[in-house]
Image (cartoon, rainbow, N blue to C red; front, side):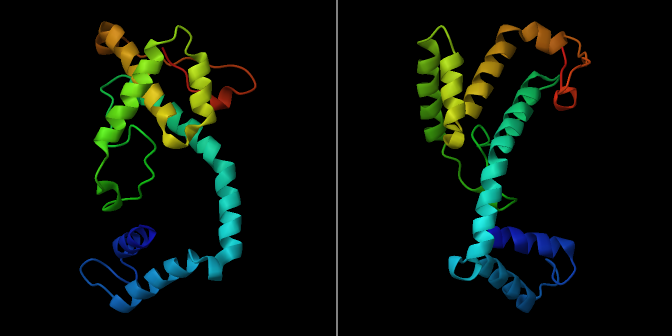
Amino acid sequence: RLREYILKAAREAKQETSWTTANPRWDEALGQFVATLLDEATSAEFLRDFREFHAKIVPFGILNSLAQTLIKITAPGVPDFYQGAELWDLSLVDPDNRRPVDFAGRRAMLEALTTEIEATTNLTPLARRLMQEPADGRVKLFVIRQALAVRRRHAELFSRGDYRPLEVEGAHADHVCAFA
């Protein structure tokens, strides 16, 4: 997947290769570079550093994704979801993002989540548990489901209401996006 992404990026940059004037030697060397980079035998130190860095930034990526999802659903307009993006979408660019989507799996996950939601009067423990185990994407599906339910319950507000940015104060004001 990474090799295909790098090749697409290089061809679109049109420096050493392009879609109309492909440079097979360059393309092959680029593919070999990616293979070497991802090979434990040749790149163990890099991969160790990368995995450490990845572990540090993943929690922030999760929070940013959830925040963006919530803003997308609650901001004025019609929320747009790319097929399959109801869970974490770790696709690169096309053709990687055009892989088949497991809609049956998503449907089953949503049904199980809905059963859990409807069986409780306090969603806080469920939300906390989903945040403690974010890898499967159920926490994102939870945010989407709950936010869309609010849109449905307040359809008039979301179709005719005004957007009002809110001023935020305090030590973390630079980290908050607020609107009514």
